[in-house]
Image (cartoon, rainbow, N blue to C red; front, side, top):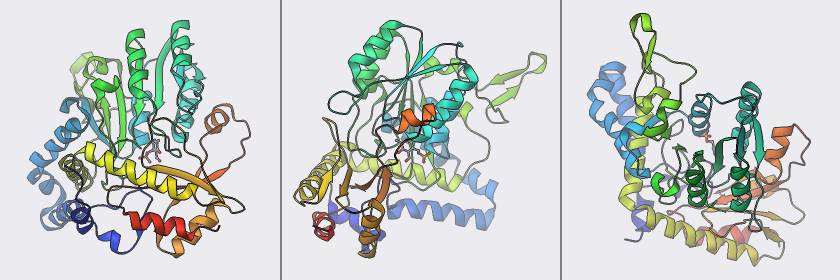
Length: 394
Ligand SMILES: Cc1ncc(COP(=O)(O)O)c(C=O)c1O
């Protein structure tokens, strides 16, 4: 069923205040999500934090099944976390790598992950190989294939949708090649989750990290990690606590048998319940319908922008999503953002992805060229898109 735009806007208070085209930053939270978070906080106020958590235990438990359903996984393969990058890094730092082995990553890897990778490489004596882009700006799967055939590959890490590019990397094809080579595949799905259907079997990934506040429309400070049950035993979290492990006498410690080994005991219960509600909200709408609407709004925006003579649209890729990046000749991205903010249109400024990862990994200088990032969601309207395009200097 197509998205009922009027209904979703009625459940999104923020649309009365702003044209929010910063969903890749942090989306407008829908009413039912906000109410879930606030209601739990009220219970903490009324009866105490531990008692409120006990009362919500069943609903809290269901958050894992909701997230699992969202990505075609099992509930015991899901851990909740406070941020997507933390979820990703916690998994990466839990693997014991063979020194000297190689880690293959895409050029559009998230910059925060690239920092973590540099630390990981230094600690474990790893070599990081940055894969080429293909002519469409996506990860070059033929280059990936050649590197897999050269051997000594510990892992392949890919960002599904880059932070500042409308492209969707061919993750399922990467997953297929990794499976054939018997190499672990780690997918950063922080920008794709919530705006398109995801299925870990189809994607062929062993690890997937997602964040709550972006296209999923969850509260800030929420995220999740998926680790395939068949590889979980290869991950020993660096910092264990009373939730992730048990003391087993003289033998030492026994680490939990499910993905919650990556969690810490304390967490925002209200936030987690809010995340679960956001996932249910997305599932109720249907991720196919979400993708359809987001894709068509984004294409509309690209078309309107391309018609403005001073504007260059930068998005690459064959398959594109809700992120639209552009620049306006003679104007800094920050100035365009300020102009739009004055008209109550939210966008963000982002570094252009190309070259950034290489410079982080090598410490080399990189001209920090920035672009305007306008990221649409299903509750945005054609009118908001026309307003944005109409305000740009010609
Ligand atoms: C592609 C990508 N991965 C990971 C993240 C990090 O997510 P979080 O801020 O929840 O750590 C971001 C955030 O912008 C992102 O764009």
